[in-house]
Image 1: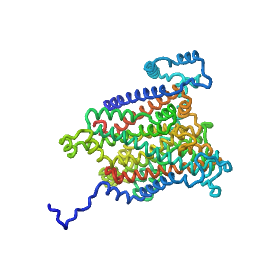
Image 2: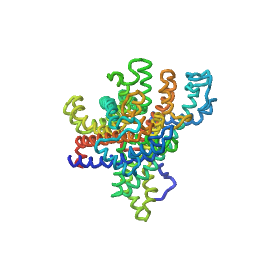
Image 3: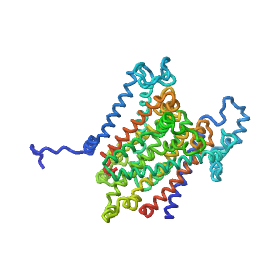
Image 4: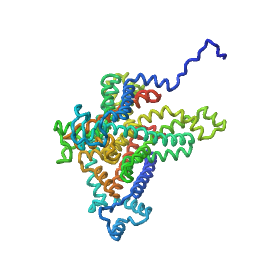
Length: 294
Length: 307
């Protein structure tokens, strides 16, 4: 038992270090992660590198195709606005929505699921019954309604999208919490007189994080998609501010004359969703021991 | 099985009521009304209009009236298309949407299941990687991006297919919209099929079937396919919802006069009853079909209905 001088404790192998090793070996996921990092830097810094603004008109270059000579690398739209800068601004909105709406859905989903799973019994049944009912609602229609009715404020978009995406998270967290509540250390904490709320925060939630991170990563592309969908219908962010969905919509209307207006935002959007899905899949392989085969 | 069915049915009814109530109150809470025009109407006329559409009653009474009429298949009059009832509008739009939707669903199932099975049989080989890469691409390209790209390539550059409308109603006009609706679902179904097929192919009963010397074809079709399709069946509900939601934009892009277009236009015009009608109609459709999917699932998987 004496920690003699010669014996060095073997380095701990936590879930996280194991996961990192698995993830690092997954080349597709790592490439996607790097691309996403690059994309984030680009949307933040890129607009500073261009002499144009997202809402300024270049009167000499209306509907200019992409060209290196006049500085409009992605071309301009029918109002002479630089598409490179507009695409990057759209990316800011999309990534921001991805982050904020996912955070909202995490917050609701984890609290709801952890409480239902930890408390259990009738409370759990009622809470999960409510989730079942909500689950069957056609939410996209309700969000469209919401946007039509209450205007298109960006904060509302964040919360509306976050508020409809927590159901999956609640179910997953609840299932995990249900299995955690029987663990010895939870019993020990309870025996020591720790209150329920504290047990949930200190013992249940930290042990859920692996699964939560996987599904959070998969939630990000979903919420980005919902925002673009709304913007595409003209219900998202408002002019002159833009988002990828809105740009795709504008591009779709000028298909014949200005295909570049569609191609650049469409590719950016698809590439981002693609990367998030790859990272999510990679994380699932790394962190979620249940689902190694798929 | 009957008990199982009744149980599921009892689950579907509250969902439907929640949906109707939620949509009802959301719309009534909205700023702006159905009679907002550039000219302000004289108060007497507006009061008469409101009375004619029963908008002067208290909200619970209106909700009760709406539910009562709904139970008799009456969605009320449209506020904007003054000469039509919402039921008539749904009856014109829905068949068009139904045709698109069911073709898309059929295509998604056939393509998705075959691609997924193929990938599972060639696991970790080039075919598998190709199919899964394509599936990932399909999942990552939303249908409102895919649709204009399809138009650009096949209608404008290659001029193979019409860019929109219904034309004479022939199949050529629905090819692009159906593909745009189906492809993301093909991708999801292929991934699901592959995952569960790999698991089933590893299980003892398929090994036994193979050990008996049955050809791979028979092993797959007779033994492996049914259990492997369980996750696909449980995905049918979400797939359906996705196709219905997708049809809203796809109909918009291709100028198809279906129910999705009525919905978007109704929403922009604040046509309360029309929007409500479409939400309730599609909502009930999704809930009803989910109920059917549950039944099929219970029939396929005895563990569930006896559990």
